[in-house]
Length: 218
Image (tube, rainbow, N blue to C red; front, side, top):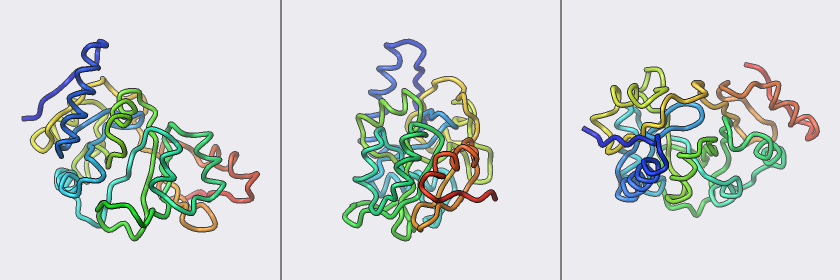
C-alpha cells in the first residue's frame, strides 16, 4: 500500500512536497494533483521509473507520457524548432490546460517510449505540482487512472485504481478542472488538434490569428 500525504496545512504541504521529491528522485512512481486531473508521475530521465508508470496504467511504449515542467523557458531544453505561434500560446495559456507536442531535442538522454522524435510538454497550473517540479525537474506525468477508465479527480479515486502500483499519493483535495488538457501538435507548419480538452479551440484561435494560423475543430 502506498504512503499518503495531505496538504491541508503549510506544514503538511511541506512534508508532502519533500516526500514526493525524495520518492521521485529514488525512482518511485507518485500520484500528484494537477489543475486538470490527478496525475501519475515519474522522473522523466529515469527509464525504469517511466516503465513502471506505463505498467501501472496498463499502457505500452506506444503511448508515451507527456512531460510536465515548472517554467515556460524549460521547453527550450526539451524541444527544438518551436514555432513563434507556439510561444504566443504559452504566454497566454501557461501555466494551464494546454499540452504542446514538439520536436524533441536530440541530445536528451531519456526513454519515454515510442515518441518518434517528439515530446508532449505542459506547465500545470497547480501550486503543489509546480513546487515539486521546481525541485525535481521535468516529470513524465499521465492521468492517474488505469487505461480505459476515467481520470481520477481526487486522491481517493487515484488510490482505488493505482494504490498498489505507486509509492506515494499526495492528497490535495478534489481538482478544480476535471477535464484533461487540450493537446496541440506543433511539429508541422500548421497547428493540429490532437485532443480537445479544457481549453476551447476558440480561445486558441484568438491567440493564433495574428500569426496567420488556426486550429480546426474536430
